[in-house]
Amino acid sequence: MYPIWLQFGAIFVIGLVIGSFLTVCVTRIPLGQSIVFPRSRCSSCRTIITWYDNIPLISFLLLRGQCRRCQQPIDPRYPLIELLNGLGYVWLFWHFGWGWPSAIYAGFFSVLLTVTWIDWDHQIIPDVITLPGIVLGWVAATVVLPIGWLDSLIGTLMGGGVLLVMAWVSPYLLGKEGLGGGDIKFLAMIGAFLGWKSALITLFFASVLGASVGVGLLACNMMQRGQYMPFGPFLAVGAFVSMLYGDRVLAWYWGLLL
Image (tube, rainbow, N blue to C red; front, side, top):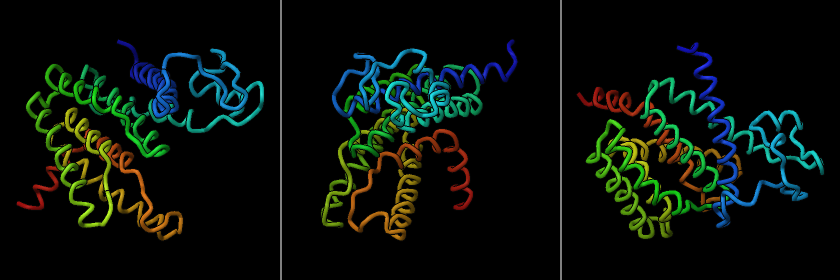
């Protein structure tokens, strides 16, 4: 058996490598481009990035955040996504232990991270992520995850259904569209992976967090009243919290009622 620090060090490195791939997804998927070809290029001078300048996190530090050729700044979100993905993998394996469920949850976390950045940048959640994600969630729940296929199916229907109703009534209550179809399919995917209880917890946390951030931005004059704020990132945070601590939240809630 390898030392625990070496095991988690390996998980962290795997997370960094996959995080590097996520930066490509975040950049290219919204534009409808291939995530495989062509090779990565500098966004300023369009020079192909060599392998030794594309080592996750390390290359950014060695290059001091600049392109080797044109010295233009490298977008800091690239190493940030890599770092968050690596830390997220370590957290999940530490929490759930070693096994296939942890690997599934790690992959799911990478999807949450990708959707967060795409929705924040472009105010869209691509179907190419959520629709296959729903199917993969059903399969994972049936074969590996502890929730089982029925909970996954109900989670998909309930998660998507609740937001579908909210999207339908929001024009009548708020006078404008409050949610997009991408949010609906995203919560349906979350329900497929985590089950119906976690889908509801996700929605609760996302709503509270989104409202809090919105009020804070309005108070600081960083957002105008009526301005659209993407909901996907808050759903992603809610899903991560629910994935890790959903059972504790439910136990606390039932404790208040009983």
